[in-house]
Image (cartoon, rainbow, N blue to C red):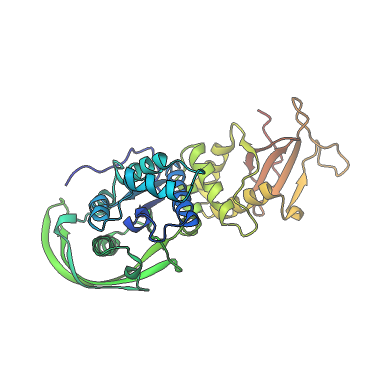
Length: 358
């Protein structure tokens, strides 16, 4: 089996496989449908910039798109954009974007092989999906590739014992968060302790596969607390916060400006080592702080323990020190200035009112 391992420093929370139907030229080639098609591709490209996600396609996607005569090649895209008078996007850029999505170094099959599945050995019969996602495929070959991908996902999911990374299939259109896949799958290998194949068998697999139509659907599949527990740098921490903020029903996906204090990450990791269940409560406290909600759980930090003591302010910019409840013993300390909010530390125990100023 080839080495498909990622760099160890990269924490991948979710693998997103874009089905070939998403890349196919729109069946209804109106101006609005073409612009929507382009916007979705740009969304997937933007999602792929995050350190916690791998965006990929099937290695057969290109062949299947050509086979069903729906490949977005240069000439087709040029005519489609010109005919509809689309000037908002450049057709050449969109064509390059599709090719970039299809020719990722790390593809869908690589993800599957990481779970111990020999991709070329798997075959299946009696494949069904509930709801029926095959009817939305723009061609026979794309439909067959979707079936193949679903079978491989079902087989790998059946064998994999790890909770993450999740694997989500991005479809052209779906009204559900998961589909039930049933198939009679042959070629599933069993391994001994040394990694050698002991036997191959045929199994009737029934698995629920996560699916999404857009980025919002992907976010709903994620566990931000799990990412926080595996965080090793501020980028991972920021990703966990972004996911938690995006899932909040009152949030509009636009994070307010904020920064991390020098020791903020280390103060979090120290406490999570002793109390991992704190992760969800901590993220909730951070999101509410950024939104400015549930202010009853906050108060300003003072220079002394007396209620009449002066408010604590930072010398260099006059920012005010604040404290928000996480639970009884843990509190989020932060600096609130005119233009920015700085997350300073997680304090412990209850009577610790320190806040770093650097």
